[in-house]
Image (cartoon, rainbow, N blue to C red; front, side, top):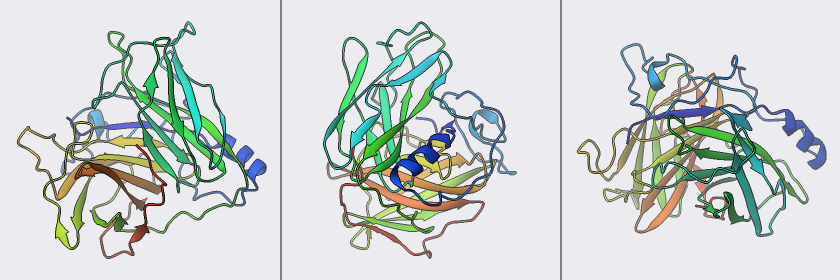
Length: 320
C-alpha cells in the first residue's frame, strides 16, 4: 500500500449555525485559508525529499478545497442529518452520480468499498466506521454519538467507473441534546489508550512533506506484533481545526512487502495544507482489538514525546 494523502477541506459555515443552536461560544483555532478547491488524487508514493517538498502526487503543496458535499459529478446524500445524542440511531446515506442515481458499484480500497468518518466540530469525538450497502445503493450503520452539537460526516470512496478517482465527500450532522462546548486537548507527544502508550515523533509542515513516526508500547515494552487492520499496520486521519480539512494518510510500505514490520513503529508521510492546529487519529490493531490513539499537533511545530500525554480511558469516544 502506498503512502498517500487525500485531502478534502470543508468550510465551517454551518458551524456557526450549530453554534447558535447549541450555544457554542468561541470556535476552535483559526487556520490559514487555502485557495481554490482542488480535486483528490489517488494514493501515490509520498516521500520527503531534501527540500521536504516530495508531497503527494508530486505536489509541493497539498491541495485544499472548500465545502465538498459534491465533487467530480458525485454527491453525498445524507438521509439522516439529525440524531439524538446518547441514543443509538441508524445513520443512512447514498452516493449519487450526476444523474441523481445512487451508486451501487465501488472499487475496494483497504478491504472496504467505503470508509466513513464521523467527527465532532470540536474534534473531541471521532468515529471510523464501515457501513453496509444495500442493493439499491443505500449505506447504513447504527451510531451512538455521546454529546450534542455539530458533527461532520466524511465518505471516503472510489466509484467502480473506469477512470474514476478517489473522493472524500462531507456533510454536516447535528446531534440534538444539551450541549456543553469542549476545549481541544493541548498539543501532545504521547497518547494513552486501553493500557497502550503511543509516542509521536515528528510533526506536520505546511506545504511540505514530513515523516510521522508512531511507536506503540504496553507496560513499558514495545509492541512488536501489531496486526494488519484493513490491510495495514496502522491508519492515520488528520483533521484541521476550524474547517475540518480532511487528510487520510497511509503508512510507508505495507504488510508482506518486506519494507515494514509489525511494530512497534509505524511510519507515515504527510503534507499539511496550511499552518494551523490539527487532530491526528491513529487506528492500530493488537490481539484482535482495534484502538485509536489521539494527538493534537500544530503544523510547523515539531512534536516529541516530551510533551504532556493525553489520557484516554476508553469511554467509547471511538468506534470502528
